[in-house]
Image (cartoon, rainbow, N blue to C red; front, side, top):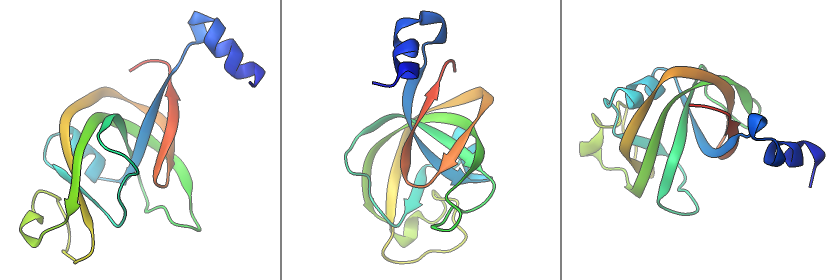
Length: 134
């Protein structure tokens, strides 16, 4: 185990909690935090469900294979209870600009806005972040 990780585990003052995170391009992270966006649309599905206490990180540009990381803001904590093929009648719930077949709708539940958004990394897929307070 790395010495820094041991320090975090042994010294309560520096203890951080590890969360799973999902980056979402602005303004959709805030729309989730406000309860306006109840579906997140992705071309892939998570490896396991449910996803509890998932941190929503809002970032400014779409992350791709070429551009894999930038700084973002943690804006909400949510649960993803289920995923299903996205339907055309769910367009509004996704706050989408267009509908296309072959995508998956992640159903967002238990939204808890983060009242003072924190600077955290924004990355592709589901990733881990360590936060010392929320």
